Image (tube, rainbow, N blue to C red; front, side):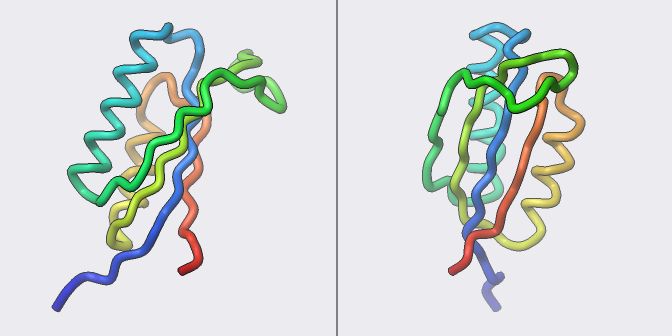
Length: 98
């Protein structure tokens, strides 16, 4: 029996303190992680934006939006990896209504 898949949207805010090269490699890291476990539909880099409030004494972050389709287990694992990755200021994973 096929696994039930759903569409998800994930917003990632990366610390600007990392520098451009590290931000680019972090985006690539998460892109390949998602591609390995899900179907990556799009990656939308919103770039540097001001944060609504200070996070770890930082006022700006680099925003990236991932759209992907996966089974129900993967988003929890992705969230766990976001939380343990240095340089990730904030992350959010939302299941889209089908």
